[in-house]
Image (cartoon, rainbow, N blue to C red; front, side, top):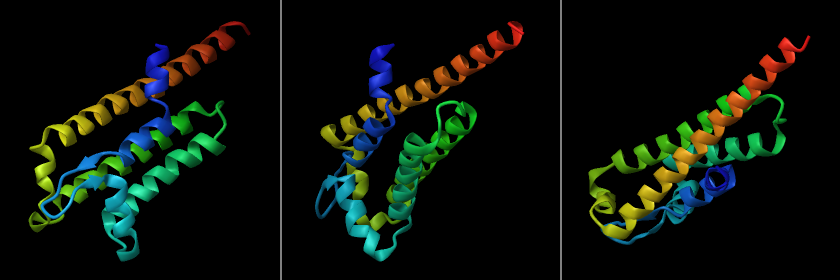
Amino acid sequence: MKIIKVLGHPIVLIAIFLLLIIEGAHFGGFYLLYLLLAIPHGATYALLAIGGISLIVIVKSFVPNKSNKIRAILYLLGLLIMNTSLVIFFSRDEKTGNMETFEGGVPLISFIIFGVFMLCFLVNIFVDLSEYRTSLLSSKSGE
């Protein structure tokens, strides 16, 4: 269970998200590079990625551990926004040639690794919620 906690940590998830390998017709690189190049142009996928990352970092930094329901909802929302960024990035235009990402071995492995880390993140969220619920039930039965 400890390894799931580490792999599913919000900061680790963000790092893996930014280090996704994109294979393009013109050039390839990490998703971070594509985001940095797109931010000055206000590309939707870049703004969504920054928004999702910011939401997860804000929740990790400022939402207290006692408010597990709010924390879980905001984490899930941040993850959804980050994944929406990826969907928009790959569906925005057929001319970009970024679909080669899913044909190459190394880029595909990076997405599989991201999927595993994302599952660990989701497990952590639901474990925290179940622990919160268990503690609420035990505190009510002790009254």
